[in-house]
Length: 284
Image (cartoon, rainbow, N blue to C red; front, side, top):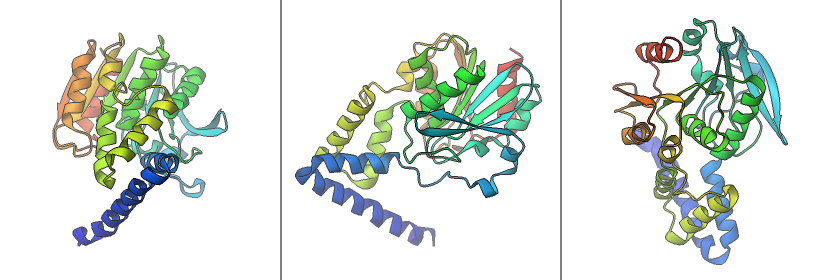
């Protein structure tokens, strides 16, 4: 039954790719816009204010502004130690519901946000540079000393620190994060079967939009410039982001330690791992 459920998705993605490929010859601008749109538009992760998860109801909620965008934030108040949580793709702040109680045992203030086009934040597009601006808005307001990111949220944390070089950050935890943006693009290309012309248009659009080429957008490259302490954890059974991606980041980050897990998959939810994170943040 699972196989038959995948057939409509397969047909849809391949049909989108065929259309974009055809457009690349007759209307390159429209082709690049569509290829970019389908790459950056989340299909899941939205929340309704009428039915937000319990863990988020327990927080103080505040909306920050980033230009025309609303950034939904959640604060569990504690002492002057502050931790910022940055979720990943097609997710929202509730993904931290198992970790938040563990972190609050330290007495710290815990802060989380919904990323662009996720949770209760506004927008239709999710990309790392914009997400990093959201993170910067929260850091300027709350001034956390610690930051934890999962998956694309982890990649955002790496890019944020590379771009903004925040001296107030003392420690960063990265969970199941990709390193090389080109790998993400190539996976997308395979999924919808983009031809060479359409793929080049997509890469050109990214370069022009963010003033950095996909080949330079590298967590390994970003982390090699860091002085703050880091903890990187990645699961060998992660079927979303390759285990080798986590190793690349760890090998480049001189002041970071690497934890190899098994059986957690991409979610990285685990009591034992939470204890190691707690020890890294508060007891080292």
